[in-house]
Each structure stands twice: as structure tokens, then as C-alpha cells.
Length: 153
Image 1 (cartoon, helix red, strand yellow):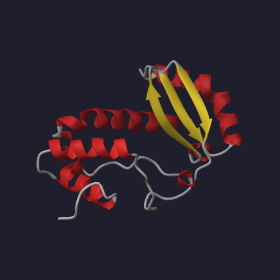
Image 2 (spheres, rainbow, N blue to C red; image 1 turned 90 degrees about the vertical axis):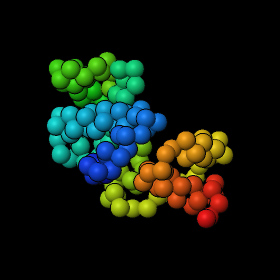
Image 3 (tube, rainbow, N blue to C red; image 1 turned 120 degrees about the vertical axis):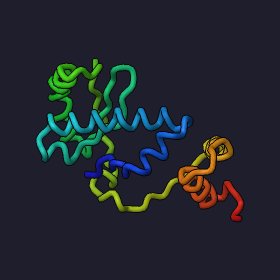
């Protein structure tokens, strides 16, 4: 199962320096922390088929690779919530969804096909225009060019 990849220290510092990216980085840190705690709670076999998807308003959402894994996670949900609360995480509910996607079983190096909506591309273009010259801005420009949202220079 793929896990969140830790950013190299230099890239992490570059992204942290950009104020517009702070909410994204904060959310990533939170999800990393939840992923590590969930990994510590679950058996290795169950953990390999589970992914932390989101945390919002006290609700932790887990993705299960199939319905059997989801059933096991649902049985453990209240114990997991208590485990997280004991570690000062503000979790009031653990929700489980089945999402039988291949990325749960593939390695991180696999290339994914992504399609952005017109409004998403517009917002990304606006973000690109606001960012100061940086590696993050360059990476965003490359992505926008791949999707035809910026002209090739």
C-alpha cells in the first residue's frame, strides 16, 4: 500500500516559505500524524490495505481496499477513536469507506492520469501568477503546461 511520502528537507523548507501553501502543508502534516498512529494501532496486514483519507471536524475517514477490510475496520473504529483520543488527537468519529482503487496496492512510483476541471485549472493559474519565482512555481508551471493551461515558452 502506498503511504504519504515524506518530502525531502530542502523541498519542505521551500514549500513552507510560501504563505499560500501553508494550509496544504498543515493538512499534510496532520494526515501524516494520523497515518502513523493508525499504522501503530492496526496489524501490518490490515494496515497494508488501509489508508487515511481525511480528517475534518473531528471525523477521521479511512479507506479500505475491500469490503472485508472495511468490516474489520468498522469493528475496530471505536477502539481506534479511543486510541487516538488517548494520544491527544481530537477524533470523535472514525468513518470507513471502501475504495477498491489500484493505488492502494501499487507503489508510489506509478504514474497517474489526472484531469482537472476548467475552474480548477483557472485557480491553479491564479496561484501560479501569485507565487514568487521558486522551484514550487516552476513545478506548478510544468504541470499547467502539461494540461494546456499555460503556453509553452
